Structure formats: structure tokens, C-alpha cells
Length: 299
Length: 336
Image (cartoon, rainbow over all chains, first blue to last red; front, side):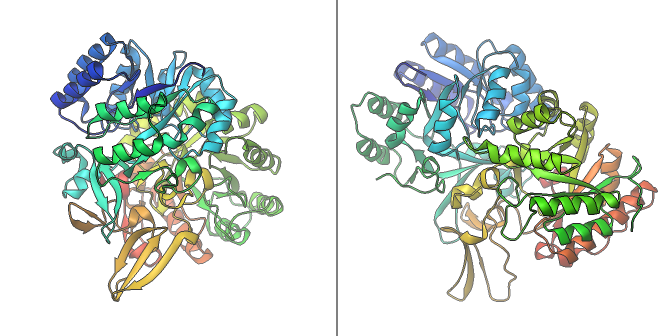
């Protein structure tokens, strides 16, 4: 928990083409100083065959650049194909793995692993059980308020990670809404999710941004932006701050948050610069303050 | 009504909801094998005003049910708040000491507490735990000794069969009532909009956040700041549950997640029995007694028909379902 704060880059949640994905990570490796990179298909097992090669190349390049690479597992492995992928990941990973389902937690027992944000870790009791199972780091669920976060961190020897930028994962389903929006079924989805690099915008009937759909996943429409909470979180003992990849200039985003951690830029200025990078996107911080997740409280 | 035998293993066990002591008595008389209830606080996933049981009411209810060979399960299936786990642990201790036949738990830490503190207690894994694969279920079995899993509504019948064969515990599945479109326990839509969630507060799309307004001749329903639907005059207006709302995607209004339907899986009951499912569950602790009674009688008749190898009598339950429409949900692969 001690030492300087580190930045992590969460897994790309969207179905980017293999070339785009590889180029993205090569840039992250060469042009950013992010310390930890989470890599892997979290949302849909159907995408994996198209991506494994690019992800492998990305992992190699990121490691060569001195980054810690963590392989992220599927969040809802239900179908036979998903389970096979999960078991293979657990059996062959040569580095740390982020568990995003309790099935992964079992397969990783006795080996150091990360508890991802899709696991329901809400309290000290569950955290203690999972620590005994081998967890070394925890990125709690998005809806956990600062008060609960503080309790978790205070009673644990694990490392803690807080998402401070990007869309918030809100729900998973057996049903693919990208396919449904095109009048298709999941089995015949024709990879509709690949058409929306930053998720499919969903609005209310009065035209306000509501959520973004990413295959079987539903995400917040706006981005969480917690620059104003970083100091408080660091004081609690949170040591890692996670940025989620969105379809915008992530190298610039990482640079802004590095400047924030080094006190070279204030949260207000960071948000103004972010607004230029992501025009029209709302920023939210409600969950951290114990309020509705879509709310925005900080200036 | 007394003296009913416990179900033969070859008949599906009926696990029925009771939001109040009166509903429990109705459920017992209507043919429930087991009734599930919750305490009157945020330890359970139907933490609604006017619902649920005090400790005294639970004691009386358990005596009533046990006299009639019906079991009572206590759902303690929200996730304990950090720093305040005592409230949830006390619920576990009290349910056990009052004689509950099983505890329905979602939180791994709480389940481990229950196993350590009450080694003899029968623990069921709530649907809210979202354990939908053999590895996840085995984790809860190994660490907390769970004896049954209530399966999330994300699996097809054939997946349920494969899963039931692959695991060492009993399976229970929902067959009637409200339908979560998202994987249970993995959905934050309600807290995203209102600050209150099923996982933390035991509520989804809470009533105090609901607003109805008349605008330009349309009835508009909102949850918090979010418009969930607009209804033309004469169009039946449903409760604004977020996942059953009408939204714009690709410029088109649609029920993007799910239409206002409820689950009815009676048609696949024989398949579920063949898949090795041990118990079927009816959702609806918030429902009225008339509904509960009618649904239980219908499902009981269906389960008996399945056990006897007769076709399932598909009664008309439609006027009791949301918007009068039903779906078999994820049990049919085409739903995905």
C-alpha cells in the first residue's frame, strides 16, 4: 500500500479489430508511462478467436517496455466455449490474472491473482476469504462508496485499485443487446458490437444520454471521472488508479492523470482538458459519494 | 391440510414466496413444499415497505409451516456493507436459532461465516451470487459448504442439464414471476440511476424514485432523472423498471433490453425435470395473496403432471402477469 501511486490501464472492453487493438497497445507500450496494463477479452467469448494473436503480441511488447501485464478473464463465462477459454487462461498464464468471475477465483486458488471489478466484493469478510484463496489485489465493484472503500482498505493487506476514468460497467446479460438492436440473436450476431468502438449510445425517449451497450454488457453513458477523489483515496491507502480505454486519445488521457498524480495539474484543469478530448461526454462521480452512479458532485 | 408428505425425490420441489405471514399461510395451504421469506430490513433482496418478517413473526411462521411438513427458507441475500457486517451476521444467527430449514445467501464471506458458526445449517446459494458455471459453484461448495444453488436466469435448459451433471450440489431454478433480464447480482442499473441497488440495499428501481407525469398528451414514467417510457392514451402503462423501459438506440425507440414480460417456464417444466433440477422457484414476495395462491396451485399441478408423465396443464395465468405477456426467457436459446 505504500510507495508512489501507480496508474493502470483496464482491459479494452469493446470489440476492436485485431490490428487496431495491436496498434493501440504498441502505442501504450511505447508512448506512455502507465505501470500496469490489463489485457484480455472480458465481455464475450465469441470475440476471442479473432483477438488472441493480437493480445499475445501486445502482451509481449508491453512486458518488453517494462509494464506489468495482467491477463483479464471473462466476466460471465457460462457457455462451454467460455469455460474452456477460462480454464486455458488459468492453466497457461505465465503472469498474474484478473479474476472477473468466481469460477476464475477457484481456478486461480493458491496463485497470486487480482480481484476484478465484476466480482461482488463488498465487505471485509469476503475480502478475507478471497485473500486466503490467493488474491493480492482488489479493484472493487463500481458502486462501492468511499466510506465502504475505506473500511475495506483499512482492514486488509491487499493492494487496492480504483477506477478513476472511463465508462462504468453496469450490467451483464445472457442476451446480446447489440444483436437485438439489429433484430438478430446472439448466435447470429454478425459481430454487430464491432461497429461501435466506444459502445452503442442508448438514449431516453426524450433524447438524453442513458447508457452504452457493448454486446452483452451495459455501461454508463458518461465517463466516471474521479480526479478530485484521488487525494482522499491515496490517504486511505489506495495505491493504483485505473483508467479504462475509450475510443479517444488514451495516450493524452494517461498523460493528464500522470500529471495529476505528480501534482502538475489540478482536477479542474484536468477535467477541462478531458472535455476537449471527449466532447459532449458527461463526467460522473456519484458512486464514490454514495449517490446515484450517474450523478456528478465535484465541480 | 396437515400431514402432507415431503415431496418424493421424483417430483420437483416447489419453492414459493411469502412477503408476509398471511402470504406464508396461503402458500403453505396452496401446495408449497418450501416457502422463502426475508427479515424486515436490508439483509434481503425484497426490502420493500410493508413486506417481510420480524423475528417473532418468523418463529410463528416456521411453527405453522413445520406443523404442515412445509419447510421455511430465509433469504439473507444482499451483500453486507463494509464495517456493518454485524446486521447480516445477526440475521444468519437468528434464522438458524429460529429453526429455518435453509439460509439463502449471496455473499461469499457471509456464507463462510454461516458455515463456521453453524456447521449444521443448510446453506443455499442465492441467485444473487451469480454462480452460473461449475467452477464458481464448486468454489462456494468448497469454501462455504453450500448444498444447493439457485441458478441465474442466463442458462438454457441444455446448459442447466450439463451444469447439474457437473456439480455436486442440488439446483433450483426460477419458473414463474418477474424476470431479471440482466444476470442477477451483476446489475447496477438501479443504483446508477437512484443510488439504491439490489446488491447493497435489496431494492431495484425503488418506488420512491418513481414519477408519473402527463406531457403532451402522453403519460411519461420516470425513475429518478431518467425517462423510462412514454405511453399513448389507452396504452397500458407499466412500472418503470429500467431494464423493461423503452429507449432510443440507432435512432429507433424500442424495448432494447426486454419488453414488460414476466417469466413462465411451465412449458419447459418436463425438460427441467429431465435436466436433473431438484426444485423450481416462484418469484414474487412482493405479490398479493390471490396471485400467490393461484400461481402455486398451477405450478403444483404442473409439477405433479410431470412426475406422473402426463402433459403439463398450461393454465391461463396471463391476467396475473405484467402486461399480460410471458416469456420462457433464457431457457430457450433464441431469447439471447
